[in-house]
Length: 65
Image 1 (spheres, helix red, strand yellow):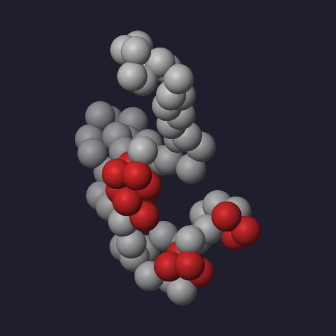
Image 2 (tube, rainbow, N blue to C red):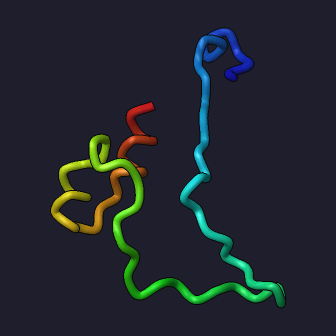
């Protein structure tokens, strides 16, 4: 929660439910996937996700907050 008077009514939530580990058992950084299928709830997915377009929707949402 925000700690200043102008942010005290804001709640910041991070959801790592679909995140994957980026370091393997040896402590090395894993190579990025060549492609990743759709993950999440179809009902709440963006239009671009339905069209299989790579987007920066998560970054755009952050800017709106």
